[in-house]
Structure formats: structure tokens, C-alpha cells
Image 1 (cartoon, rainbow, N blue to C red):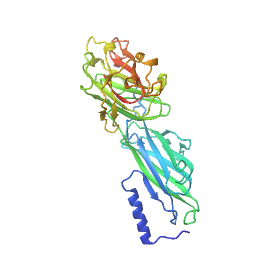
Image 2: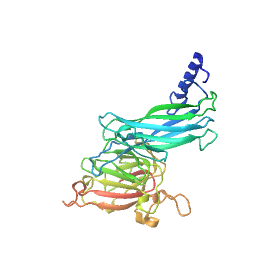
Image 3: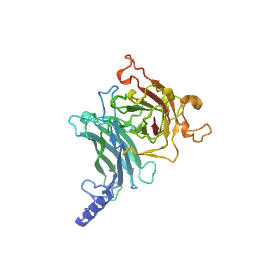
Image 4: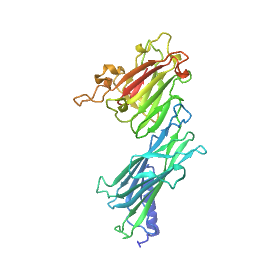
Amino acid sequence: MGTSLTAAGQAKRALAHWLRARGTVALLCAAAASGSFGASPLVEISITALPARVTLARPDAVPPLVTRAAYEVTLKNLSTNTLNKVSFKAATTVDGAIGQVAPYFEDNSTACQLDTTVSGNRGVVCNFGQVRGSADASGSGRSVIVVFNAPSEGSRILLNWTASYSEGGNDSTGASHTDTQAGVAETLLGTPTDTEAKSYIKASGDSLFTGLTGAATPTDQWTTTVKVPKAAKAAIFESQDLSICSSSVIPTCVSTALSIPGTYTGTTSASFLIITLRRDAQTIPTGAKIRDAELFYQPGSLNEDTGVFTPSAAPSFKVKNCSELAGGVPGRFNTDGSDAAEEDRRCIKTRTEYSKSNQTPFDFRGDWEFILWAVENGRISF
């Protein structure tokens, strides 16, 4: 057995632990072994919600809107001791709604799988095995993103987690033991239906849209749908700002700003961000022609928490048709490897002016639709 701590020593250890944990997201502790205290390793665990707020799912929408909450789990061994049997378990609960669940969907690691011991498919378990000491820069850490389907009701998802790890008999006590840490991470739920949408996109790609169905209506006069081809944290914010663009074709200027980290390059539609913008017929003046309408792009950055877009010093510019670009597709780089001009990183692929006849689906009658291909984020006004 290890040597028991005196009362003063226990108080000192408790104070040190409190000071390390206070005010931080990461939980850093020297955990107590069962019945004895040794030189237990410092293990840092951080959980980051991706994104911090998620739009509620809308299963009754056509098409249904499926949204997801993800958590990036990072475990770092800061001691020189090797850890064995390192595992991470987590399960979700939903606050603010009775009978709602947030089931496990997928992860990006071969170490994780559904935890069948948890009811409602709400649990995930990741068995990382051995984690080397801090001297091994690449072997002393583990990172994984675990993804859960969002509910259609509720105020937040709570991720209740426990991490455990064993240290061999080579510590100062000469005894093997298992240490644990536990905590709760949260994702807030709910965004304005008509102007915002937030979700984590699954690995195989998915679509995210504003509005009840993604179609523009007299009460929701413009909508945005974004198809993202790979896993990413995605957010859409819509606003009206007359200072962004001015057009004799459409006097009312509206904008859509995206926060979808990463670059999306290739030669086919499966490679790009596909952005569909729709305007309701009531916003379009009589006699206006979609071929004459201009869309503008403003470089800058979007705060995905507040929805505030901060333009860069560069001015806004008209978005080209894809037929005007080399190869008919947008690109991030030129053939010589240099950065492509902002004007070449997105383009209008198609313009559709829906008929007003009864043969057109009701929500689309007389509406305009623009489909853009893009390789990165930004704000588009039209």
C-alpha cells in the first residue's frame, strides 16, 4: 500500500486540484488511486461542442431537416508515465422536453462505437488502449469527434462523460490503480427558423437550410440551402442590409453569410459548397428578368455565435457565372499554385425563374432561384 497523506497533506492536495480546475474548460487533475495516493499522472481532458448551438431537427419538413451536435474530445497525458486501458464513455440527455433523445450517430475514430449498455442508443464508448507519456509527442494524446442527432424539441443537449485510465506499478507507490475523471458538456438548442441554421455535417456530407422547407414564401421571403460535401461545423445567417448592394432589378437587398470552415475544391458538384438562394415572387418587381439580376460577394469573417459579419478591407464584387471561369468551375488555387483571385472562388451555376402557372408547386410560383458553387465561406448579397 502507498503511504497515507496527513490531514494537512490532503488539504494541500485538494487546494491544488481546485486551483487547477477552477475557471477552465479542460479538467486537469492528479486523481486519487483507490485507497492510496501515488504520483498519478496529470491527464488533461477537454470537450468542445461543435457548434455551441444547434438548430432543432424538423422531421415534418419536406425534405426533413436533420441536424446534429458534435463534440471534439481531446485527451492529453502530461506526465512521463504511460497510461493503459484508456477509455472514454459518454451519453446524452435532453433538457427542456419530455421523451426527446439525442442518439449517437457516428465518430471519426476506429476506437469508438455505440455503447450498447446505454438505453436509447444515446451512448458512445471509445477504447484508446495505451497512451504514452509526455516525452512521446505523437503518442501522448488522443482526439476524436463524436456526433449525435439533435432532437426536434428541447433547450439543450447534455453530454455526461467519464474517462478512465490505469497506471502500472512503476509509480511512487509501487501499486497499480485506475483513475477516473467525469464531467458534463452541453450544446444549446434552437435558432430562428427563418434566418439561421446551425449543425455539424456528417462525414458523407449533408444539406442545411433556413425556412420550414428551404422554399421562399410570402412570410419567409428568402431562404438559403447549403449542401456541404464532408464533415464540418456549419452555420447560416441571413440579414437585410441596403448598404451591401444596390440594383435596379431587385431594389430590396438581402444577404446570406456562411461559416463553414475548410476548402472545397474539385471538378464536379460533389466537391464544392453548393449554395441555393431563393427569393419569393413578392420581392421581385413586375417585369424584372433573372438574367439581369446581380449577386455580390463580400470577403470577411462571420462570428458563428453572434451572427455578426465583419467585412474585410476589400470591396464587394459581382459574382461571375461559372461559364466565365476557366474550366467552368471555381478554384482556390491557380495552375501555378498561387492563390486564386476572390472573384474565381465562387460562381453562379444556374438561374431559375419559376413559372407562375398552377403546374408549378405552390411555394415556388414566380420565385427566383440561384445555385452557386463555392470553395469557401463568405457573404453573398442579392
